[in-house]
Length: 497
Image 1: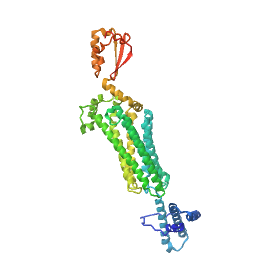
Image 2: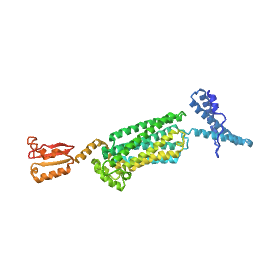
Image 3: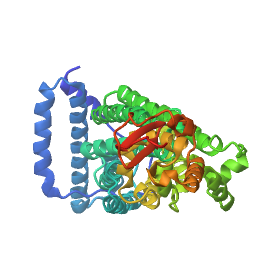
Image 4: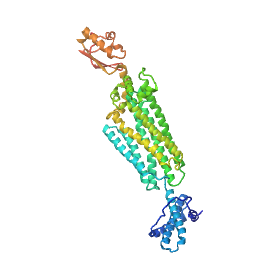
């Protein structure tokens, strides 16, 4: 089929399939007639050489718009000068059809297939903007870098996405706005989850690595890697689908890639929830054998009720003593619940996105904006607002998140050391002091009270095995107990021991 035939096909007599209850006939300034004639001439020249079907489709739409505009201008001139009124109904009918044709062309150019809501999109853009300012303020003041950067990136993308949707109300067919909002809103939650994943690692370190299946560093590596993979898959799929939709090509491949990326994120989040609940269970019910599992006890501890706080006092001695000051902060015990709720919000959003995109770009959910606001925008916004009030910088303390991550490797040795012998103890013995029977009794009492593991080197029979030739002479001998090893602080004599 040549270009002229294709043009004639799209310029055949057009009538609306349905009539609105009321409409206003479009008016066009007659001075635009010269511009319309020039446009029609350009279309005729272009369609003679164009072979691409997509380009021919757009040329035919432009030609149809020119024809409808000519009809309206001619009708306006006739109604303004004609004296015979018998032709008025026919002319008016032609002008109505031309008006409806122009409106249909405009609607078909709408990449969203809906009339975007300015108030709601602007509201969410503003709310994410305020949340961003709060997160940045708290993050910089508490020196919480990683978490703040992750949530800031996600929140910035949400702001960009809803600003683009607000502007797109006035420019339905702008492909740049469409691509901007679809990619921004699709990948934004991945950045937020990257910050949430890191929180579990820090919670494990603060309580003790024995309460988790994986080590903290492995939790961060595995789930942040999964997050990065889903991020790139979603972004590439969204970009491919948006470009295909703009060019009226098949969007199936790009849509499937997006669904796959979001589906992968759902799977990784499900696995994360498993490790999270397992950590919460272990830290609640395996630390102290006197605290047995029951659903009511679980809720008391999770919601940090008054009875739950009493139970936590019995659990505290079994946690890493090095981070006791963090666990005693007022907001800390709410953190497991906060993480569960925030992940739940993003989980709902991702499930919605999978179902929405599975229906296609003209499906029911994506063409009804109330679902987007309730199940996507609101869920992500609630997550961000939650971490304004429970920001790790506020929960753990200023600069503590960096110290927790740095001391992740030291935590194990600190916990091991404390579980065996408590804090490092220093005992000073002088030559004269050791000869006193009362002092020997006091020393034995102190050692019995403070020493929490059996060390044969503290037995008098062991000390008696040493003679004056064992070590150089010295007035005093000082030693430390640390992980069942003796460290010499200063050279000393073992005489008279």
